[in-house]
Structures are given as C-alpha cells and as structure tokens.
Image (cartoon, rainbow, N blue to C red):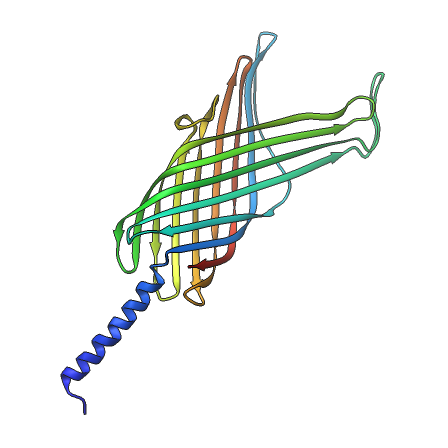
Length: 270
C-alpha cells in the first residue's frame, strides 16, 4: 500500500503533466485557418435626385443569384501570453448574365434575340489587428482589438445589344483603408476543443474612402477540434455588412449588402 505522501506526489505529477499539455495546446506561436464560406447575400440600392423639379427617391432590393462558396483565410500570430496579431481575408465575386429570349423593338430601334447584359461585382476585405487579452485564464480569454482594415468594391458591366450598343458600360472600382476596432471571446471547454467569437467595426469617415459615408461591420463564430496539436478542423458562421452612401452634385446613391453563411475548413499550428 502506498503512503499518503507518495500518492500526493503522483497526483501532483499527473496534474503538472495535464497542465503542461493544456498550456501547449493553447500556446501555439502561429495558427493558420484555411477554409471557405457558403455565402448568401441581401442587397439594397437606394438613391435620391431631382429631375425637372421633382424629387425622385429609390429604395430597391435586388438579387445576385444563389449561394456560392468563396475562400476565407485567417491567421493568428501569438507573441506573448496576452498579445497577438490577427489577420483575416474575405472575398466575394459574382457574375450575372441576362439574355433576351425574344427580340424587342422600340419604333425604329430593334434589339435582337440573344442580346445580353453581363455584370460582375467583386467585394474584398482584409484586416490586421493587434489583440490584447484583458482577461486570460486557462479556459477563457477576452481580447480587445485595434488595427486597420482594407476594403475594395469593384463593378464591371458589358452589353451586346446588336446595333444599338456593344461594349463595356461600367468599370468602377473603389478601395480604402480605415482603422478598425473589435473584440474577441475565446473558450476552451475541453482538451482539443476551442470556441472563438469575434466582432469588428469601422466607419468610412475614419479612413481613406473619399466621398463614401457609412460603415462596415463583421461578426463570426467558429468551433475548432484538434486531432493533433498541429492539425484540426473548424466550422462556424460569418456575417459581414457594408452600408455606404455617396453624395454627388446631382443627388445621392447608397448601397447596403449583407454577406452571411456557414464556414468550414482546416487549421494548422506551428
């Protein structure tokens, strides 16, 4: 029969080994998550102007087709117990083509069957933030974030309407950088499991978005499982919202887009 001191020594040793294993799982220097997001969108265009002395207002929802899988990347570089750099990248690229099944005519103007209008809209967001864990325990962390976010929206349009018109009618691109603030909650409810919640916000007036007024918001949540210390899988949900207006000499035009959907991928730690 073992003595009480011997049993205490074994218990302390086991506790130390378990604690060291847990610390190792949560002390990765660099983590990279590669995945994809199944994106659904809600889109609204709005505007106001004056035509022949009459005020004209527009507020219209529009569809850009069904859901699509798009790449999603994020990385975490942890350089101390409480400090880390977090990188995120998101892209959405959508094409749409509308074709006339029958020819149409307006007086002497005729648009033949098979004429089409094609448009492409691309949206990209990348952020790099400094994250400081104001709360840091074995199972829970709360981090506050400050950094920079880059966003770019580009639109292209091409039409083939027979003799009426043929060529590119739209080729616009706008990008800018602005400070972003955010917060993070991380839970490790059990060995090998991690739950991460994050939210970020920027206002276009903070950065270099020229005549655009509005904001960009983002929130996401993932659950990650590690098969080994170096490799795991994750799944979750992402949500983005872009809501901006641009004022001109002849009126105002605005765009609100929400991108949302499930995410999934693999995680690698070094």
